[in-house]
Image (cartoon, rainbow, N blue to C red):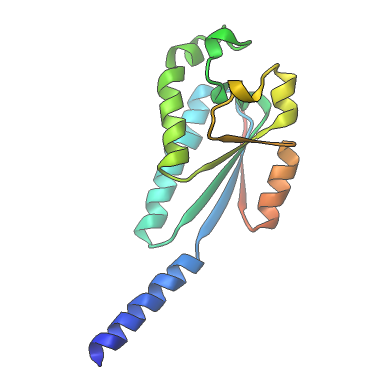
Length: 155
């Protein structure tokens, strides 16, 4: 009987932990590579680890617009961002790290379609794991109305 009670208590605490998941939406507009690396690539991994250590999930969404488009294109060498030496020298490694966030850490990336067009980009130019949405405002409104905490990452 004691074993059954312990199992029930354990199951209830696991269910409670799952219900108490934290949610965050990053409003990513920075064009600064160091800022992007620190506040997105490193910070999300650290935040996910923290929540996992407390048996809570962290649901992360990144809405991309402003100067951040350049971090999301497959081939910056053949784009309008070709003169950004820091981006061109690191984009292959950067791509792997961003993809790892999407696939390993379940981070959802949303990019503004209006800005994609403005920068002369098409769906084929953007990483496959990034979803194009009508505009960044809609993405931010939807996520905040779903209870996501808002964190801006600009310059």
